[in-house]
Amino acid sequence: NDWAFNIFETLFEKNKGFKEAEEAAEKEITNQSWNSQDKALQLFAILFAKNQGFKEATQAAEKGFADQDKDVRESALKLFKALVEKDQAFKEAAQTAGTVIGSSKYENDCAVIIFETLFAKNQGFKEAAQAAEKEITNQSWNRQDKALTLCAILFTNKKRFQVATQVA
Image 1 (tube, one colour):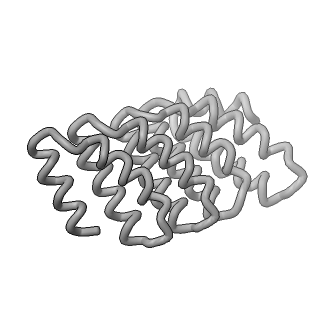
Image 2 (tube, helix red, strand yellow; image 1 turned 120 degrees about the vertical axis):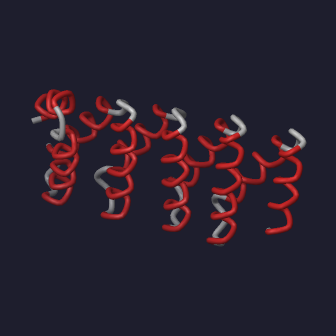
């Protein structure tokens, strides 16, 4: 793994190997090995710096977030955060976060982090409000609580307050 990573770095210096690196990183992000996931995240970061790999990273993040393995989902979260920070994948990140907001505590925490990252880019308010609205009417107090957590985040500034009051 390390030697392949070094080869890609050398190729990037010559403006080569982007497609191969995108494919390798997309595959490795869902690998059960934490080391492989970490290397994939590093590889995507380098690709992003070269303005490459956004489509493949988005696909890998969506696939990884659906994985049953907690570490894979965590890597997908980090990848979504990195994409949003690079002004990419707003829609996909918001949709993914919106679909898992009422799930397990871990997935809810991931969704909240994605929404907070989106909010910092002035994105995702509508999707967050829709997710909160859906969960607030659920019969489960646990899911209602998760919706209230999301509403609390929406209340942190005036624009978000307006969206959150629509849900309430």
